[in-house]
Length: 76
Image (cartoon, rainbow, N blue to C red):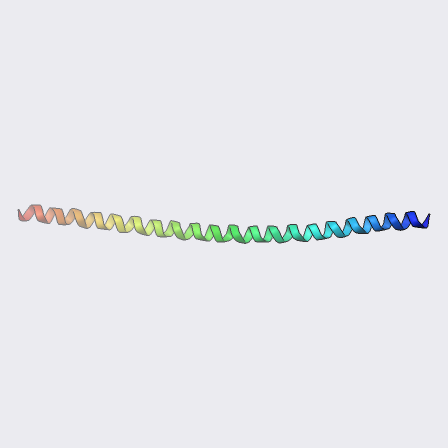
């Protein structure tokens, strides 16, 4: 009888230990994914800002080109 109780106790403790280890691994993986997502979101925001700046630069350049064309047409 004592052997059966000891075996069942070992099984329960082993299961609890395995669950604890797996839980810790899962939490670690969740944290790694959160960090990766945050980095990706920051990168995306930076790229959006850069894209907006480039669009503004393009608009300015096109405006300057239009003005230069008008000046050339006026001189001809």
